[in-house]
Length: 445
Image 1 (cartoon, rainbow, N blue to C red):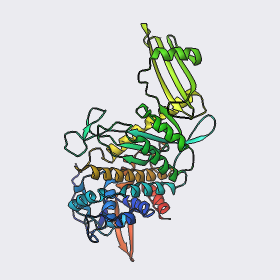
Image 2 (cartoon, one colour; image 1 turned 135 degrees about the vertical axis):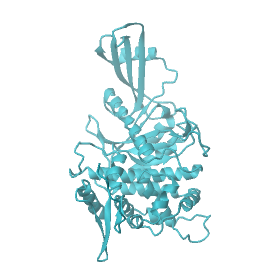
Image 3 (cartoon, one colour; image 1 turned 120 degrees about the vertical axis):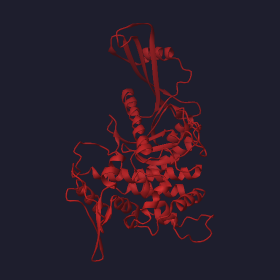
Image 4 (cartoon, one colour; image 1 turned 30 degrees about the vertical axis):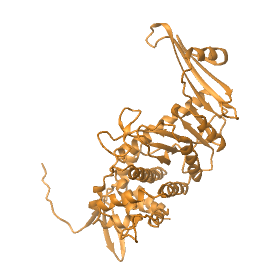
């Protein structure tokens, strides 16, 4: 076994060179300036540490998958952290906690984060990817979905029983494009019904989405959001939609009768019939007719060949305005399931599921800063895919946030000051250096 000799060094090293990329992206926004000029009544005079430095420092933590306030302490003496994020002072953990508490009480911080995030995404070429239908029209998906955050065994403000059976919060998210950029988010108490004020949230989400893209939007929502208010918002905002209907007390046998009379039957195997159909309906409370798409499945023989005494019937139906076949509408809706991956990246890769504060408003601010961080990392990941200089050769459409953190944020380098210039020197065999260099030069312009 080789025994290493351990020695101190006068060299200045950093294990998080990727914060340089984060700093360049933030410099393209007014995030720091707007937070620094935000008036906080509890702060009577000009603070020694600007609000912009506090929020930017916390974003620097989140970019490394750290959310606890105490994690800021090692960076107070880290000159690279200051320079990379272009801040004057890194707050202590107690100052960070106290200042975020104070900022969270002020109206206006939400619009700063969401507007600057949307404007930044819009600056890049082809920021979002459309999904194309058979009529050759491209629609940018806008997926609205609730995902419970498990904060069990805590006494945090707003924690209550969620529909998943755990104690926590039930935040609402709006993801744009196949990349899954977060354009809107709202922290809610765990027991809040999924549809509560979702029509307002939907309208705001469409507004932020249109800052990023001029392409037609395709709103997708699950059965928990089957509400006439959501349909009205989509129609008034001229956004197409696929919203799964809540079956409520509708009987499968009734739907089978309708499908046998008006639907298209496909015999998938012996003992299994699948019907697809459509009809035009004007929902109660609306003046505009809407297409109702349905799928009915009847099984008289199960997949193991067992003949059933009573046929097994199930059905699903959707609201939409898309002028395509029912099979395609249902297929487009099933892509809505990709939201679960986006939820996972926020919860685990950024370690956001269990919030560090006991105060609801502060956790709401932290969630919004986390979503901004998620978008910054998503931009870096998508830009890294534009050429083949990355060592990962497996072709992918979207890099996971965890992969971006591991390979481009926590990248080691040596800091050298020479001729009034600062150099970052990477290892001779650093596999991600070509990608990092290209991104840095691209973001610098």
